Image (cartoon, rainbow, N blue to C red; front, side):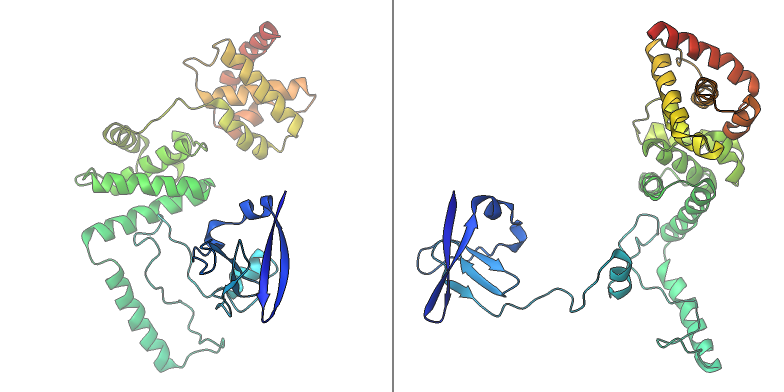
Amino acid sequence: MTSTNQRVTGRHVQPIERTDEETESEPESERERDECPECGAAGITDEKRGETVCQECGVVLEEDVVDRGPEWRSFDARDKAQKSRVGSPTTEMLHDKGLSSVIDWQNKDANGQALSAKKREQMSRLRTWDERFRSQSAQDRNLKQALGEIDRMASALGIPKDARETASVIYRRALDEELIPGRSIEAMATGSLYAGARQAGVPRTLDELETVSRVDRKEFARAYRYIARELELAMEPTDPEQYVPRLVSDLDLPEETKQRAVELLDAGKREAVHSGKNPVGLAAAAIYAAGRLTNVEVTQHEVADAADVSAVTIRDRYTELLDADDRVA
C-alpha cells in the first residue's frame, strides 16, 4: 500500500511515491510539524532538496532550508575526528567533566611553527593561571587528584574506559555524600576502582590492585567495604567466567580452550562447586583442565603465574571441576 504525495514546482506538479514503511522509518528529528495551509496536514523536510513538503497534498511549505551540518565530507571515523571543530565529549574521568579549555603543552602555533621566546614565556604563564582557575575549590582539587589516581591505576591494569567512568562516578558519589573527609584519597580512589571494575564486568583482584596502589591492601579493602556499604552498591558475587578471557589472552591459548573452560565453570556452578571458592582460582583451574581436554600444552605453574594463585589451588580445583562436568554430562 502506498500514499502518493505531490511536489509543487512552479506550475508543474511532480508526484512522489512514498511507501508507508519509508514514512514510518523516518526519524522524528527530520519531520517538520508545520501545518499545511491547504489541508492542515503535517509537513516533512527533504534535506537533500532543502524543502519542507506537505505529506498529503505535496504543497511546498518552505524552500531553501539552511543546511546546519558541516560543509565538509568525511569517509571514515578518523577523517571525521580530524575535521571536526568541536571538543571532546564530556567525561566523568576529569574533575570538570572536560568542559573547560585546555592550553596545549606544545609551543607551536596553528601552522606548526615554533613560538618565539617571548611567546613561550607568555604561554607558560597562561598555562599556570589556567591550572589555577580550573581547580579553585577544595572539592575540585580532591577530584583532580583522585581521578588522576584512578586513571593511572586503570591504565596499569588495562581496565577499559567504561569501567573507569563507573569508578569515577562512584568516587564522585562518595565525595557528594561526604565520605572522603578524614580518609586517604588514594585508598578511596582504589576502592572506587575496584568497585567500578566489578560493576562493569571486568573485575580485578585485590592482589592486582595492590601492585599499582599507593596504599596497602588492608587500607583500600577497608575503603571499598565502606563505600559499598554507605552508597548501597549492588555487588553480586564475582563470576569466575569473567576472569577467563583475560587469562586465556595472557597465556595465548586458542578459542577452543576458552570455550571448554567456560563449559567446565558452568558445570561447576550447577553442582555448586564454586560456593565459597576463590573465583580467580576456579577460573585458573578451569583453564588448566580445559587445556588438558583440548590437548593444549599448558602447565599448572604457567596458569598459576598468570592468575597469581598457587599451583596447589589449581590442583585442588581442577579435579572438582572435572568431576562436576562428568556428573552433569
